[in-house]
Amino acid sequence: MDTWIIQLHDSITETAFVIITAFVLIIFCFYLIPTATDIMVDSAAGLASKYLGKDKRTIVINSSTNNPELFFMLLSLSIRRLGGIATPLGSNFANIYLMFIAAPIIIIIKWVLIGKISDIKIFLGIFNKEKMLFLWHLFMSLLMFAFATIAYWFITGKSEFVPLPEAISSRTWPWIFFGGLICLVGVLVFFFYEKQIREKRPELFFDISEDNYTGSWQQFIIGTALLILLSYMLNTLFLAWINIYDDFLSELFGDAVFAGLHYFLGSLISSLPEIIVAIKNYERLNSPDFNTAMASASQSNMTNLGIGFFGSVLASLLLVMGINFTL
Image 1: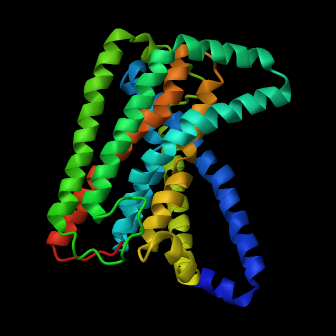
Image 2 (image 1 turned 90 degrees about the horizontal axis):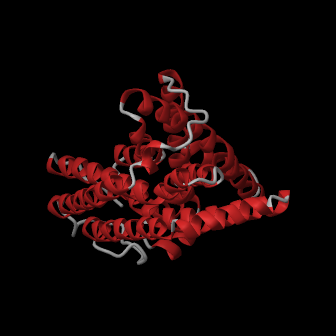
Image 3 (image 1 turned 90 degrees about the vertical axis):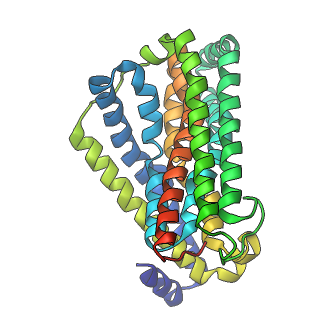
């Protein structure tokens, strides 16, 4: 498929190709991925309520939004690209500015445009009431990002904001495996602190709204399958861009263009489901759903570390078996 994209680039003008690929990205980002995620997340929340208990809905909702990161990573590893692990780790960075900055701004602008000024006052009132809850989620999100940053260094040998070399000769399987262990420690730390807030305020996890939570296995499977397909198509587009715009992208990301694209662009695209969940829950204007919205950053960041741990262990095993990777 990437060959087909390259052939399209060679057969039309540069301007036309840029317009077409930009249009494809817009469709993916603002319609296809959000739609597939809605189908999957609503079903996952309903299934969680039915089989695990209502208090598990928040973590299931926000963990389900991490499926794109998981699929991006697995598909990348299947083509021997270690840079795919950068997607879940990079999503920890994207989630912070998307959930705590972008989502509230989008909601307030929306309410201003449709004249719901009273909703803005209610929202600010809830924020003022739940300042400590906000600070807890912000702190946990930043802490999970710190673990992701350390893990990224162990896996790649560089900071995420420094251009990467293509080769990974200096990163043998013990380094990558230890990076995964760092991710695991972050997951355990999160559950330790979340247990305390669950005990203090159980209503935040029991009283969230149940709108559209269908609990359908069929819809969950359909939504998951769609996300797998969309992840594959976006991964293919990334590979085509690397071949077409290698010189330009190398100036931005270093030789390991694939890892750079996944950390900054792949993680941003894969975080769109989280911001959709955050916006919907912020708009419900109550504390439990306010908690679910902010958990789109903190709990999703924890889940991303879990995905990073799984990817690192898998990559380490493959390296031990003699299968080599590039970034």
